[in-house]
Amino acid sequence: MFLDLYEEVPLAALNYLTAECNYGGRVTDDKDRRTLTTAVRNIYCAGILQDGFFLNASGSYRVPIDELQSHEATVDYVRQWPLMPSPDVFGFNDNADITKDLKEVAQTLTTVLITQSAGGGGAGAKSFDEIMMEMSKDILAKLPPNFDMEVAMKRYPVRYDECKNTVICQELAKFNKLLDRVRGSLQTLQKAVKGLVVMDAALEGLSKNMLNNQTPLLWMKVSYPSLKPLSSYIAELLERLDFFQHWLDDGPPTVFQMPKFFFVQAFMTGVMQNFANVPAAAGRPASADKECQYTETFHMYMTTRMINPHFSPELCAQVAVINFAVTMAGLEQQLLRRVVMAEQLELEEQRLRLVEEVPTNLKTLSPRTYTTSSAVGFLPSLTPLFAIGLLHTSIKVTNEAPAGIRAGLNGTLLCFISVRG
Image (cartoon, rainbow, N blue to C red; front, side):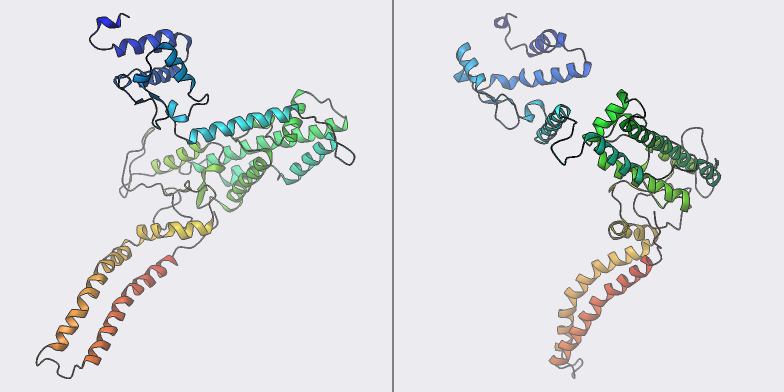
C-alpha cells in the first residue's frame, strides 16, 4: 500500500481492501457484505489513530497506541480480549445476548430431546404407545367439529357492500383444512399404534414432536404461523375456533382480534373495500379501482368494544391490536374515555375549562372575601365568623362543580352498551 507515500492514511482504500477484497470475496450474500463493510468502517476511521480510541460503545475494547510498540505486544494485547464479545461490538444492545442465549438453550434442549429414548422407563412407567394414545385422545376430545361451510355461505353470502363476508368464509375454510389435518393425523396415529396401519415417516415425526411437546411439522404445513409448543398451540387453536364460531353464530363481533386470523391482510383489505364501496355522499369518497381517496371522515377505530353510533358496521371496524389478550374490563376501563371524547366532545371541553377555572377561582376567592369583609361601610353586619363560613361555603361549591361534570360524563358512558366481541 506504500502508506508512507501519503500525507494522510488512505482509510477509504483500506476499507475497500479489507471489506471488499480480502473478506468480501468470501461473502456471497449482499446484505452480509454490507454488514461487513459497516463493521470494518467502524474500525478503519480517523479515531483509530488517536490514543485510547474505543472500538465499542461500552469502552471494553480500546486501542492503546503507546503500549503497542511491536507486533508481539499487539498480539498479546488482543489475546486479552474476551473470547465471547459483547453485543455492542456488532452494533446490538444487551438484549441481543438474551435472544442469543434463548436460541442456544432451545437448540441444546432440542438435541437432548432427540437423543432421549422413546421407550418406557422402569416399572409403572407408561410406554411410548400408551403416551401417544393418551395424548391423541386428549387432543381429539378437545377439538370441535368442523365449521358448516354451507351454513356459513348462506349467512354470509358474497356481497358487494360487505367484503368481510368473504373474509370469514375464507378463514373458516382454512380452519376446516387444519382441523382435518389434525384430526386425521391423530386418528391415523392411533391406528398405527394399534398396528392397524404402517407407521410411516410422517407418523413417526408426528409422534416424536408430540412426545417432545413440539407443534408437529405435519400440521404446520396447513397451519397459521406459530412458535408455541404443542400444549400452547392447541389452547390457542381452540381460542381461534371459538372466536370464529361466535362470529358465525352471533354475527360480526364489535372487536376483531387480529391474532385470531389466518390472513390478517385479507381482513384489513376487506374493511378498506367496504368503505371504498360506499357511494360518494355526505363527504365520503367515491369508489376507485384499487385505492380509496383519502378523507378525514374515515377512521379505523382500534379502541374499544363499545358500539359507535355514528358509523355503520361497514365503516367502523374496531380492532384489538395493542393488547392481544383483550378483555372486556380492560377495554372499558382504559379506552372508554377516548370514545366519550370522540362522541361527546363538548363534555370534554367543559371539563377542561373547569380544570383551568377552578384553581383561579380558589386563588382569588379568599382575598376577595377578606377585602369585602374589611371594607369600611360595606356590609357592617358581616362578622369575621360569618366571613369564614361564607368562604368555606364558596370553596365547597367551587369544588362541587367538577363533580357535576363528572356526573354528566358518567351519564354519557351509560349510553354505550356493552356487547360481546
